[in-house]
Image 1 (cartoon, rainbow, N blue to C red):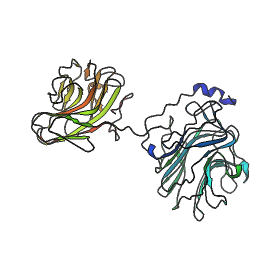
Image 2: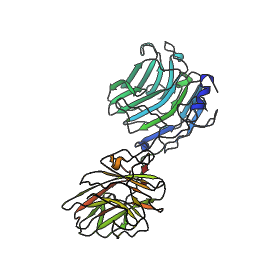
Image 3: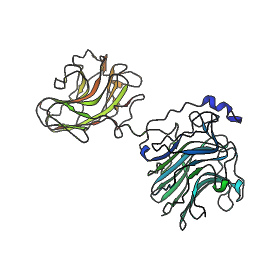
Length: 437
């Protein structure tokens, strides 16, 4: 334990990433900087599993921003063995940073704490970001970012001292030809320059400048280091991250099951659209079913003539061709009817109606055996799935239950579209509920 940070580890939450990252496939490097106190292993949690070599940098349990540790610098560096590395398009560099002191005014080694850099041997091409008090560049301590491609350059400068007692979230982004610098989620500098990102060669270095100069002060910390290639992420002021960066991309939800539908149903749209053009009762079940956990999905329908569709859940052992109003089924119908079938479940809520284009949300709490329905974001019967109150159905029997949709007799030319989480939901799922996948 070192200095004032000794007590911080007591309050540090174990790292739990919030949700998923829609740009996770574009993440080049992701360092949570977790590890054993005094350790020397820095694990890249991106899909690339890059090799990162520390030199006089350790994982320390004293005062991480998130998780169990942070990168603790003793005039050293983290070197990402990634030759060659270029960012030809949009990008985002971001991290949490807590220096222990400020750079001193001048143009020497003590006037720049290098945050990251990449350069060639002659310094004719370089990319860097530093916390500096550099004569002729900054007015007092501030951030200095530069890309020099050997003929054209972009430079961002944001004057203002960073905190030495808490972390600052720092991000540098490129969107098209617009470069931006953010501190604690607020844009502090912007410049529009047409420039090609250079290929200086050499490894990307975090926390130290060329030739061992411009090193971080002893005790400086970094946490949640993320490099994204192909996405700017931030183009205006944003909400500062309140949890570690996610380790996964978006959930790939289930689909309608082409082998578990009636003959009159045709699937399209990556098996997320179920269409029918008969006057028979038709139905379809999802590929994935659940007997435990809390699950969420959204459905909508279009149709001509007699609009009458039913949404809900159906158990895996119930034949797909039996009526949606009977058997092991819990559904609500657009004509303001609700059916627990012969499942043994109890209809606890009030049936409601909906029309073509309405978004119907279904929340299936398989642990509590309850099903909830919302229309255009409003839970019926003032329901609150997160709190367990106001369900439509209760006492759903044990078993594996699937998302289910059906069209009533004479419901001709209808198309039912499901969103099981493969794209952004129209409404936020209740707390504790996940996309059906």
